[in-house]
Length: 294
Image (tube, rainbow, N blue to C red; front, side):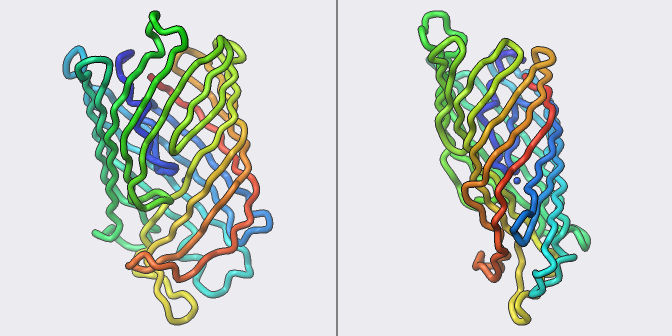
């Protein structure tokens, strides 16, 4: 397992990601909350991830898994131009298949495909509920190379997921470098951070991330008396502080307290046109969880 480098594969937040789940997580459960505050909508998400690696040979692995989320939206009583009860709850489920192998030189290739559903599930599942995602990445990992004075890892690729808050392909870029015994940083999209390694067991991070989700509204939703919404979409950009504590080499607890820099909550039609925007003045983004990782 120590040779698997699927930490590169992220389903954007969202996985709010989907996300993205990081495929280095063999198991993970976390809870995210956006308090409503002065906004017209609040957000709660409970997420569970399970992955299982299958060794093909010394330098290649298959990874199979699943990623499930239950999302609850809480609307302000001032929202009266559509039936809020129809879109208070969404469920997202992805089945993942990943593959990685060592290339010539110092590079490794990784790819992942997933399919599942993202819907409010007020009826039976249909084709409209189905979602697909995929990632292709190339990794150059020098974090444990004794000949490198300042360990680094470079990941380049592209990522797409229908059930996240950004419904189009985005570049996946990640450059990690440890420039001091207690300091490191990661620059890229969709995540960046500056880390202070407090000890072998704990770290503090200043983070910046994207998050969100897109889900089907079964049967459509009447909005403004004459328009039909077929999708719910939320996208968020956050920045804040994250604390991580390792109980063992693989078991880790984490907690995020972040400020929302920008956010959108929209209802869209079949052509992806916005038919309604909910007032979003949420300030804080809170997340806590535990994961068992490679």
